[in-house]
Length: 125
Image (cartoon, rainbow, N blue to C red; front, top):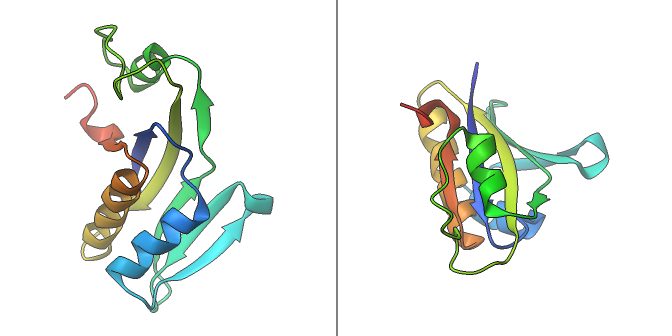
């Protein structure tokens, strides 16, 4: 079972950011590329998949992020300007203790990209 997250950021989330976040959590975490580079998967040393992070997609307008998240837009830019927003989908482990590590990595990835992590399960709650 997995939980769904989104990283919204003013910059593309690249592999270097993901690797750094994983290493900060546990240097033994493995990383593998899926679907010809369209996704990265982080795997704990015991073989548990912590998360699968999909290639960032550029949204031309911030209102698109609000629409896709199912929230109401205030018209305020997310990151203080008219720059595009990058949308990165992430599926994380939903069971403890893997969930805790995965969520920490997602938040670290978002912070490194200058963005924020949004739990899709929390949208509309």
